[in-house]
Image (cartoon, rainbow, N blue to C red; front, side, top):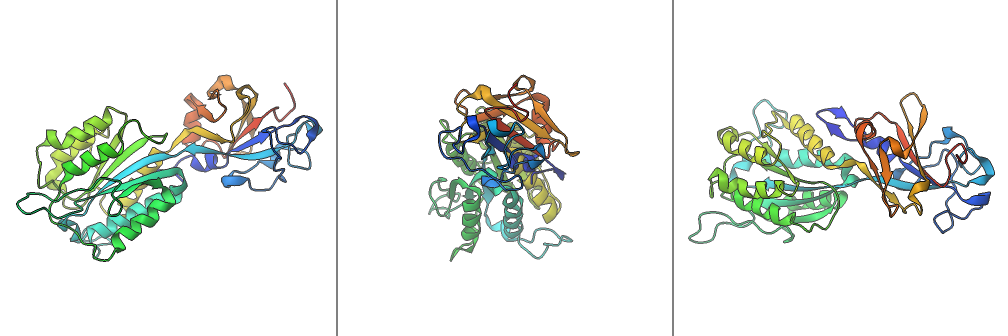
Length: 365
């Protein structure tokens, strides 16, 4: 489920996408060139897709035009987002999160650790995540600040990886023997490492987002322009940066607001308690997923023969022509929603969406 400011968004509908293939003569051969998987109307499709049997169909769960089509249920999924978490593990993160909060006895690093895991877990399959902890090494002799490893130095960092694997590595980081917070807050260097981690050409499709979790001002390279430079560089490539200020960050308001503005999010966030922190991070995570760019797996052989049906909360199914806000890429691998259709998918207007390949549900037009 996607959350945005406590509002349920439309990913469940997108997780319930089905791509239905029609083959001539009602044979069991898939229109995609292989032997199709013919499912009963109430069966669950691969990857969590659901076929809406209320549309009618033959005894194989096919479309309503009977013997001329056989149904092959395939998955369609929203394009995963790419999130890099920049996490402050300086010594001040050992302090209690906030008085009066349910997590008051827990240190800030622990409350933030748990909030991020809780925010990501429901949509882990729709995200790739990595983490840059800072600092990761104490300041060297004669130095003024701790060091920050590149994201691919893992451990201690976590390179971009699918959500479930990230959550495992995320918990393991804090449980590692000898893990401890480290003196100094090299925020500028950490942001520079995030910039490098998300450099072009980038390996993955989808949105790119940076989330900074910190409880105060940097202790080295403190000039706002220098700290914000990597954020501005990322913004020039379409990368959004969110800044989350934990208790203790009020004294750094001007700098953290500067970073948020440079990253396209205007102001830094100041969650008052653990639940507010989880809600804020869930909103950020859900915003990284693109519910309007859908991967069709396997691709449709002929994009012109793909049909889209939406189902609303009343159970009403509607055919949506490609001219009304959606299209299929030339290679048949991606469906893109635009305008009102994209808005509806994002904000939960549909309980299900079905992509039908070959022939429409009512028979050839």
